[in-house]
Image (cartoon, rainbow, N blue to C red; front, side, top):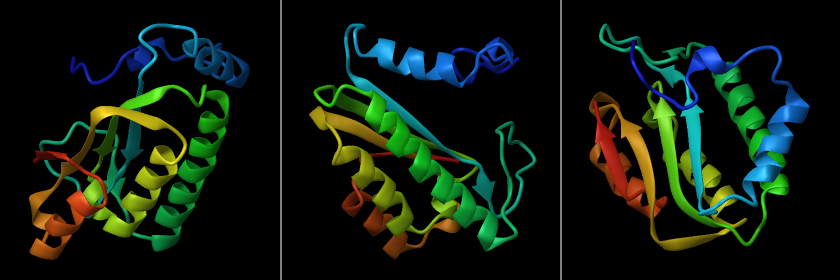
Length: 154
């Protein structure tokens, strides 16, 4: 099996509810090293690639994408409220699907939301998975301006 996350998916059960989730986030404030790493899943892409094993699907309706992004903002605000504001961001990673399916302005807004809530370590990694077929020169040039400094292509 592919190893894509920790804990792996088979560890997630109905016995781990919202109260457990919130408690785990709050308890993380007391654990070393204390640096923050955020993973933001963007499950959308223009079409499914035959080699992809990710949790993704083609986005056919803009309203679905908008609803998902709105839910992400709600979740980010809730999580930010549970994390000690003195902790520092070490990494933000956008995966998918193809996060570059979204306009850069939407990605920048999510980065700004996190980066305004916390300070960062010196040179945090802000990474994004990119589908080269979705990107033109203007998009590539806008990614660093939106805060991205690491790119995974494919």
